[in-house]
Image (cartoon, rainbow, N blue to C red; front, side, top):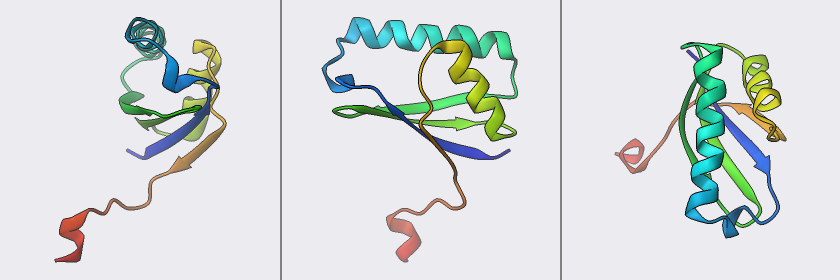
Length: 90
């Protein structure tokens, strides 16, 4: 199943409180439950004005549908073509 990195432009994302991030996470999980097991949220990285999310889904349209239903942006969606780490250099 393809893996995607989603870039979400959310001004002030890095200033969100733990409680606010919990609420965003709960909203996302609620939408995912209703969409079924084909789409999975792996994890997200919160930065100053963006959140980068890693998802597994059959296609990009399902990622866009999740964003629409959840009410949050999916400004850029990129399919992961390879994963590298320090062990790749060995």
